[in-house]
Amino acid sequence: MSIIKCWIEAMRLRTLPVSLAGVVMGTGYAVAAGQVRIAAVALCFAVALLAQIASNFANEYYDYRNGLDRKGREGPRRGVTEGDISPRAMLVATYLTLGLACCAGLGLVAFGGWWLIAVGVAVALGVVAYSAGPYPLSHHGLGEIAVLVFFGLVPVNFTCWLASGVWNLDCFLGSVAAGLLGANVLIVNNYRDEPDDKAAGKHTLAVIVGAELMPWQYFLNAVWCVVLMRGQWSGGWLAVPAGLLAVSAVIAVRMTRLRGAKLTPLLGATAVLMLVYCILFAVSR
Image (cartoon, rainbow, N blue to C red):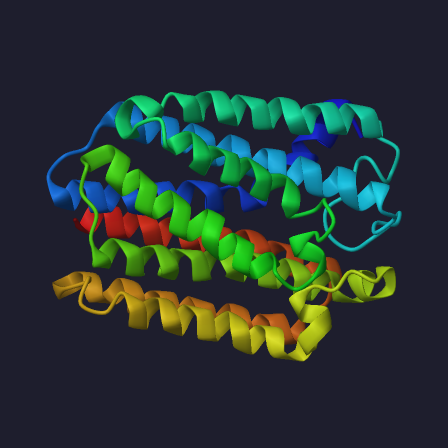
């Protein structure tokens, strides 16, 4: 495998639509408010994308360092564990990418004030705390909560406010809904990796409550998404939440019938489903 392909694999392209989706939904709320600052939206996209790539790099490095990965594991190839990428190179790439995300975030100060630096620090700490530190979130069943916060609450609410100067309850409910859809990507990931994680002592939600419950949680998250956003869709757009439930049901059923690497396409499909849902929401405004 070429070194370029190894780095692309480490970015986990299948998951990147999740970082874009929250910003897209936040932009939709800004459109509904009657004003969109394009520069603010562009910076929000940059921060979200770079922060997720940094998180993916950090996850690979710290899981390797903590002995939680093994060669030949299910799911995407881990370049550091397989010896394709040196641990030092991955560590440097992690903090270089995170630094670029912080630089993009500083540009948002012009739209929201200096207090946004505190938000940026919290996001940067979240990127690292997901896989590292004294209590790594992804190792203690808190990964889905982290995704809900950093891929739902933060991007949707802050993109809306920074782009339009307006915020309301509908935006908050939409951010929770988006976060639940983002959590579904992690649910598929942890459902697939449950045997490996259990053997390594990594306590994901799938390991703690049992993998057999994860397809049910997946569909329940979609149901809650529709419930939280009731009244925000109208007319012909009502087909969108109905379609979300239908596709989520199909994926949940497929989860019960597949194991191992065969689940990886469902992970990508879930990320795309979230992005499409958010795009259609923005278009409907």
